[in-house]
Image (cartoon, rainbow, N blue to C red):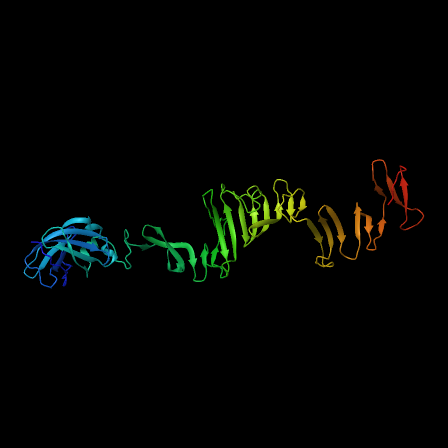
Length: 421
């Protein structure tokens, strides 16, 4: 008759038999276990045939068993039953796969007093001793933290690994053989290829023979990029070094047609990019509000250099600006370096002008000789013959007088219709 009695293992008596498996025989994958079945009031379930489900758990609250089996047992007059875990009908897993070496194990017992398969949880208890013969059969070493530390044999030191190798990081030089690596750590700096890393370096790469490729960083995704970023004490201050893939789409903001991303190298500090395009073009710019303006734009195909703006240069040196005016200023230590100093060449709309902002002259000449001097008193001195051609039919010659006048000029005309201003 089916009973409504709830079962529990109020006083679990577990005896893991640490003795006597036959030494010459193969280690059996089972161990002895005893328990007392009691009802909810603590009375033993005497002389009763019942079925048990036994689970080996890695933790007390584990929901997945490492091994699980069912057995039929008979209790004595005290409710005591004795069995061998591993000798029942396996439901889940295998005794050989239980990781005894990883630490504590727990036995969960479920009972059906009628001998069927309607199991009622009767409690979970810790195995206080690991079945040593089964454990020894796995040739492992117990480890803490629940991690599997099994290995294939004893670990030995490489014959060349001597006491003088202090501070070298170790590595496996062969199966289960430990030797020294190339990494040297003295507690302050780490050296690769050197046992005397510089105290100024956290990581010191060293080579003394031939050429060396010290670091290789590679991203094989053609539509991606590889990036190196370095920060200082402020997380918003950084420098970047980026290599784009050969099929990366798009281009740098505002100058995408000149500097497409594909195979480009870009590096910079915060908002100051330095760009090396795939075709050899070089650009240095400033990003403001998401817009990039080039201040240096060298073109590989023409050899032209643009300064001051993002337009494609059309001369060997081309100063360009997106505003309506542009100024080239040349100063030195004598003139000073303010916006009112030096020589100024300026365009304003379609007008152009040349100014000497200093209280001095402007001189023009050819063949290492002065041709024209503009004096600060608004006078003009001509030192050689000057030829002015206002039209194709009128020619004017201005020549110094031969009568000794220092600044007096004569006029000679080949045609009559000559206009002298």
